Amino acid sequence: MKDGQSFARVSLFYLFITGISVFLFYLINWYGNSLFSGMNVIQGVSANTVHMNHIFHVLSAMVVIVIVAQILGFLFKKIGQPAVIGEVVGGIVLGPSLLGKLFPEFMNTIMPPSTAPFLHIIAQMGIILYMFIVGLELDLRVLKNSGHKTMAISHSSIIVPFLLGAFLSLFIYQDLAATGVSFTTFSLFLGVSLSITAFPVLARILSDKNLTKTHLGEVALTCAAIDDVTAWCLLAIIVSLAQADVSGGLSTLVYTVIYIGAIFLILRPLLTKFSSYVEKKKHLSIVELALIFVGVLSSSLVTEVVGIHAIFGAFLFGAVIPHDGYLSHNLSNRLEELVRVLFLPAFFAFTGMKTEIGLLNSWGDWMICGLIILLAIIGKFGGTLIAAKFTGASWKESSALGILMNTRGLVELIVLNIGLELNILSPRLFAMLVIMALVTTFMTGPLLEIVLKKNPSK
Picture 1 (cartoon, rainbow, N blue to C red):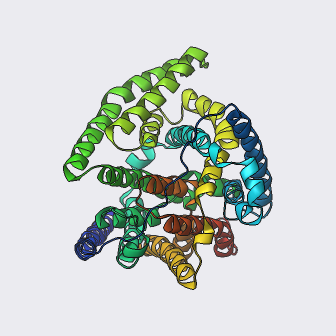
Picture 2 (picture 1 turned 60 degrees about the horizontal axis):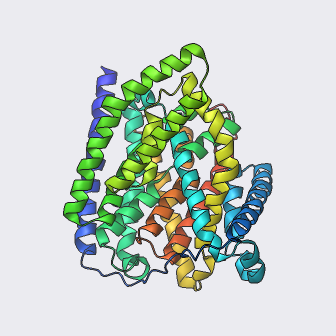
């Protein structure tokens, strides 16, 4: 009887927040479509004619990038932060925000503009492989078996910051949106940007603090997994809208749904059988590994051609491989260190080359940046806290969940780079959102320590 009442209560709460959010976004979008964006986009670094010395510059740049990433990752880990935050900061340090500001000639020597197109390709390959690993680590059974309470907490932690981001877009669209982007696309993207939770970084934080097997850790990981899947689905819709008109966007969505259906109905059973075959012999041959890579790249190619982003294809392919089998663990072990040491620092460096904190050159800019950070924190923390408390969690656990769900990290940077590439974000807003991603992730560990200090086993 109590379970039935609990389910009915949570269902009513879920329907209420969903209905209210749809209505509020409709009002925001209705008013926002009367606004006009006025920010010109600064085009990214274009590829120059390929010269023989480009390979020298790219290799030397990669040497510096990997060394800086490892040094700052080590230092940040020493102060209790995830190493990935130090690696992201390393990318920004090597860009125009610091090195280019203090020693422009030195920056142009070790990372001349001509290396940017090559770093971009390395970075994109790295992100495709990284999203494949994220898919491998995602346990679809967790989503299937997640209770109605966890689902309500997760979606509340998305809906509230999403609405705050959409509402904020009413005030910054004209000044900070790229020229030509529609209000609908801009507001949807800003909403998603504030709604992101980085599942891999959150998992690393929980592991470092020995919380993975606790009730708090299990709920946080499940909510983050649901958040990730929901965010990627929303982002796929936004990308299709940004890359085509309404009719083109609808056809892209149709093709995307068809492909997702094919992945789950046709490819997933085949990969399950293949995983069982590999499980029996406890060995993955070079030819079999090559077939997996062909599958990952082909899936990425399909989603790129369909009109969403290549990373979605890689993520989907990884997600349908059985999570706890020998195949999944073997692929993760083979790929993870290479991707983290070599490819991701290239992505951070390329992101750093496009992040110009110097564009925030007035108190007004920094006030907007502070407001973005504040709304991102309030939205994630508040949405999670309210839903968790409503579904029966204690104040301590609800607060801890709210803090954990504010982890954005690398996943946020991937989303922001997509927004910049699609000319949805201006470089100035891109820099603000990168700062937001760093601040919200940086604060997770210390705040979690404070909340759980009196009861660390919670």
